[in-house]
Structures are given as structure tokens and as C-alpha cells.
Amino acid sequence: SHGTKKISRALHLTILLTLSATTFLLFLQTQAISLRLSSTQSQLQELQHKLETSTQDIEIQVEKQHDLTVIHMAGTFALLSCLISSFHMTAHLRKMNQPSVQRKILAILWMSPIYAVTSFLSLVFPPSAEGYLDILKNFYESYVIYQFLSFLIAVLGRGDRGAVVRTLSRHADHLDRPYRCLYCLFHPKPEEGGSEAMANAVLLECQVLAMQFVFFRPLTSILGFVLDLIEGDQVGDEGSGSHVSWSFFYSPRFFVLLVENVSVFFAFAGLLKFYHAVREELAWCQPFAKFMTIKGVVFMTFWQGVVISIIFHANNNIDDDDDDGNTSSTPNNNPNSITSPQKIQSILICMEMLLFSIAHFCVFPAEEWEEGYKIRYYEGPGFGFQDFAEDVSMIIDSGKRSLRARKGINREENGNIGVGNGERVRLESFCEENEIVDGLNGSNRVAPSSSSFGSMDDVVVGTDDGVDQKALV
Image 1 (cartoon, rainbow, N blue to C red):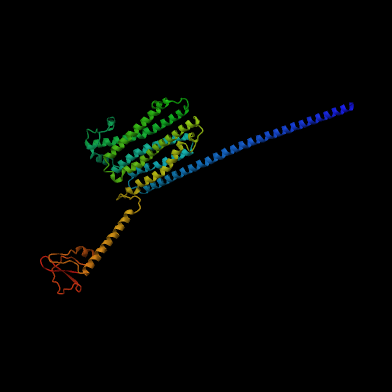
Image 2 (cartoon, rainbow, N blue to C red):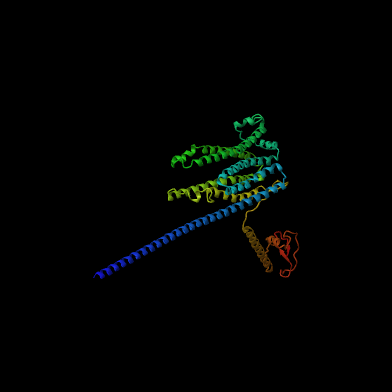
């Protein structure tokens, strides 16, 4: 029994050691598996991070390629606009028949290249450079407005200011008096020197009103650029509310815009005053079409920018409602993105300047200033329906004339001309159309004795006075 107990204890000890060893081995395997799983999980996370990073890099590269493609397209349009304008300007330089006039035209033709190049550079340069480029564009806009007035004056006087004054003096009865604040510039005064003094004062007034825009427009552009820089540093300092929108009317920017619009008003008032006074003398060179190609550049780009800004602001407000205002990461709010309002405006201007350079080529032809030039009118594109209708009408008329001729010949062959005493057969139309006889009102002739119409070449016709006349058939 003592030996049995020893054997039993040995067995229990062996079993206990075996279970302990098995448990230890299972623990080691479990730890190894957990370590392997954690290592695999870290590798998966690292791989996922690499995939996300590579995906973002690919998206960035695709976006850059897309932006580069759009920039290349805008650059192509800008280059074509510059080439067309350069060719147009060289045409005027080769045919400089009226230097006093064509110098003004050359200054005007620079407008499309300057707008196209500055818009393209705003796509390439950082957003901070856009303000400087806008100052250049706004200055040349005002300069071109004055150059257009100088162009009209040069066309009217061909370099002779006295001729312009004499032309205006013929319309002195219809001229409005100049502004009193400008009387210090007039000598002699409009009331003292007659019609020529009034004409000279009006001409000088128009020039001053247009010239002030050349000085005020760059100044307002510079002030607006400085205010943009100041306001950009203060974004987010004020809370949202209705007072923010009303505060614009008390801000310096509002007064800058007010001065700018008043300056624009006086500039166009002077230009229109001069045009209405001498529009009959300038009608041959079509000044209204020329002016529309100039002001169309400014009006289209301005209102186009306003519409784009309204659309993007409305879109951002919708995003604010959907995303609780977290729209700072959207590409539309990033000024560096090609889909920002400023970039889209620049792209559209590059494309539109090509059209305006073509329009300038059409309305400012170099041949217009040659001796003996006549205005050429071009018919609009059509399908030629009018010419086709005229051809159809000609064929129908020819068929009608042929039918009338055949009916007249058949009446003669059947002896149905219908001649009687006191009756005269009207054969003029038949004779004229077929060139058979010279007329029925010839001299009286004696009818031949033969009574058969079928065998004779003369037709006997009775008259009211009993005298017979014959028509040679």
C-alpha cells in the first residue's frame, strides 16, 4: 500500500508537470500568435497609410496636370490674341497714311494683348500678384477711353485742332454750356468769343472729363488693393450678422467705389457729348462699332466677374448649410485652385480676348485710312434661299412666256385671230416677246387678193376707218 501511494503520487506529479508544461507551451504559442498578429496589423496599417499617401499624391499630380492643361489652353488663346493684334498693328505700321489718326488706333489695339497677358500671368503667378496686374489693366482701360476720344478728334481734324473747333462751331446752337468749375481753363470765355470760343471750350471740357479718368482710375485701383490687404488680415475678427453687410456702406471701400463710379460717369459724359455734337461728320468711320469693341472688353469682364462671384458665394452658402460651415477645405475657397472665381475669370478673359482681337481687326482696318477708301458692307452668312427663289421665279416666267408663244402660234395656224370691222387685234405683247414683227402701227398696205390664210404669208387686219393693214407673220 505504501508503494501504491508512492506510485500514485508520482503519477499525479507527472500529470501535474505535464499539464503545467502544456499550459506553458500554449501560453507561449498564444503570445507568439498575438505578437505576430500585432506585427501583421502594424504592417497593414503602414501599408494602408502608404496607400492613402500614394492616393493623395496621385490625386495631387492629376490635379496639377489638369491645372497645367487649363493653363496651357488659356496661354494658347492669349498667344493667338497677341499674334492677331501684332499682325493688325504691323498692318497699320506698313500703311501709315494718317499718322495722327493711326497712332491712336495703335494705342487702342494694345488693349486685347494687355488684358490677355495679365490674365494669363495671374494664372501662373501666386494670388498675391493679382492685385498688381489688376492695377495695370485698370490703368490701361482708362487710358484707352481717353485715346478713343483723341481718335475721334484726330479723325475730325486730321491733326488740326482748329479744324475740329470750326466743325464744332457749326453746331454751337446745340452745344450745352461747359461746367462752371472748368471756366478757369477757358480763354477766351465761351460768352465772350462767339461760336468758336464756345466750340473750343466744349472740346477742352470733353478732353478734361476724359483725362481725369486716366488719373483717378489707377489711384482707386491702388487704394482698393491696399484695402484688400488690410481686410485680408482682419478676416474672422468680426462675427456674422446683419451689421456686417451694412458696415460696407460705412467702409473706405464704399467711398473708393463711389469716387471711381463718379469718375467713370464724367468720362463717358464728355465722350458722349463730343460724339453727339459731331456724329454726322463721323458717321463714315462707324465710331459706335469701334467704341463697342473697346467698352465691350471692360463691361463683359466686369459683369462676368460679378456673375461668377455671385454663383460661387451662393454655392458656398449652400455648403455652409450642409456641412455646418466646414467649407475651408473645399477647392472653391482656395485662391490657388484653378476652380476659384479669380482663376475662372482669368481663363475666360484669355479666351474672350481672342474674339475681341478679331473684332478689332474688323472695325479698325488699316485700309480705312487710304485715299479713296469706301466702306465695304458684308452680308451676313446665309443659305442662299433668296438666290434659289429668284432662279425658280426665272424658270417659271420663262415657262409662262413659252406657253403664251405656243398659244399665239396655234391661233394663227387655226385662223382664230379674231379680226372684224372696227376691231383691232392686240398682238404687241406676242410680237415683242417673240421678236416676230416690228409693230402693228405701221403704214397702210393693200391686202393681197388671195382669200386663203393658209396659203399666204400676210395676215389681213381690219381697221376702224376701213383701211386694211397687214402684219408680217
